[in-house]
Image 1 (cartoon, rainbow over the protein chains, first blue to last red):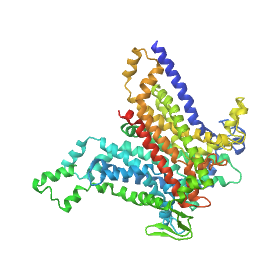
Image 2: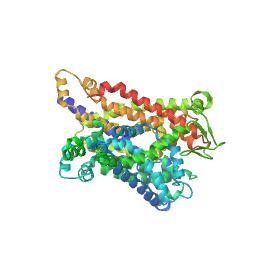
Image 3: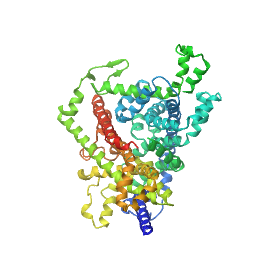
Amino acid sequence: MSNIKGTIGTVISYIVLTFYALLSLYPFLWMISSALKSNQEVLSSHSLIPNEFRFDIILNTWNQLDFFRYFVNSVIITVFVVLGIVLIYAMAGFGFARTKFIGSNVLFMAFLGLLFVPGVTVLVPLVQLLKSLGLIGRDATLPQTYFGLIMPIINGAGPFSIFLFRNYFSSLPSELHDAARVDGATNWGVFFRIFMPLATPVIATVGILNIIGTWNAYMWPSIVLNNPDWFTLPLKLKDLDLQIVVQWNVRMAASLITITPVIIAFLVLQRYYIRGLTAGAVRG
Amino acid sequence: MGQAQAGVISRPPNNKRRKTLIQHLRDNAGILFVLPAVITFLIFGLYTVIYSIVLSFFRWNGFGKFSILPFACDPPACQFAGLDNFAYFLYKEPTMSGYFWQALQHNLIMAVVVTVGIVLVALPIAIALNRAGRGQTVYRLLIMLPMVTAGIAVFYVWSFIYEPDGLLNSVLETLGLGFAQAKQGWLGQPDTALPALMVVMIWGGVPSATILYLAGLQTIDKDLYEASVIDGANAWQQLWQITWPLLLPVTVVIIITTINSVLQGYEMVYLMTYGGPAGHTEVVGLQIFKYGFGDQRQLGMASATSWALFVLVFAVAVVNLRLFRSRTEV
């Protein structure tokens, strides 16, 4: 009896899952299929399978619209943001979890308080700050502008990253730390040789969250970057709006180019990500 | 901690109280780990927050000069306004306050509908995932995909789905539900634009909620279910008396993070409707953005409105934690 019930339950589960998986996937499937159709066919047929596979559209988008350039820009910005975040906030998390200093609690609360400040609140002040530092504007160079773009993104990721790293480092047994110190290791040695290698799940979690966020970021880069050659992929994608006739197939090919790298990064890191995220939340 | 102990061992006890400066520095050396974060925070966090607070008491159109270190506010572009900015958008200036309260109303509708929607969709999927033995990994991956690409690329797809001759309308046509079509497009009609946006938000928010629920489900002791079967409980009772209460802490996390992101968010609205048609999808974040970067800049107003938003976000988080605190301490 309960066996039959169990089987029915499992069957229903699979039906629910299949249905929702299709719903999740549909927009992606549609994106892929439209990137392979002629613009006419995109508009006239809603079938997922193209009549004629037009691989030239993706190639043309990549070559003629110079997407390689924007791809490189996106990679540069994302890499620096993620490296910065992991290094700065792993250290900070370790500092809060494993060392003592005057004012550490107050400081930690100050960081968490930043979580509630809406991002849009500081947009205007940030732009004024970057202007007065000469990091944006007509005379600013590419490195200056990218630095001005990157630092606020890093800072924005601070509270949550510190929180995850601190929780994780606190949860490791204190014997690890004590034993190393008895052996004469400094705090720095303990951090880099013992704690960082153990922090892979959190590094992956923080990494994937910020890879996704930075790669997809639109608003902040659109404010800071005024030279079209310095654009990131999302900005270039949005620029396609300026076409007089909307070419949905080109738009979808460009969208596909934009999201593929982040999907690959996600597939590589997702195992750790689930572990890290749930560890943080459950311990919360 | 280790440092303090080491200090005690190497020194006679009577010296403990009179620490030298060097001793103090060594005891607090941990602050060096936090220093890069603190410097970043002071410049790009604290400074901008203070700047924004000060600016909210001024009227400034972005020309001329306004700065706080050293203080400068050059008239006529910049003028001290006291509490005027707040008064204007809250009640004093009808067009402005109407604009604000309408946007806030949309934010609140979104906060409720999107949060409830995400919980209602994510929980059954997590339960189903938990039961799916071998297929779990693959399904989990497929279901997680939308969270990876919440950005302009996906908004384009949804925009097309919602077009007048887009996918949704043609599906309705095929199903014989032509009367339910949105002729001007789902994002183009005042009555359908906001719901259409909320569907995309739920679609994008379900994956992470599902993962959190799944993790919660995996911590629940299976014996509880077996014991309840012996007591004659059916699946529905199990859901309400075991699963739901034990997952409440997870639900609270989901509620708080969802409301937080819905109240603060505006990028999706900016990209998909820009607040239209005729202000029907206007949200507070978007208004702040328009005050700050739109055609007629009112930077003081942008700051003032954003602090109202901060108070709201903060208050909602506090209320949520208070409401659920007694029940979430496991």
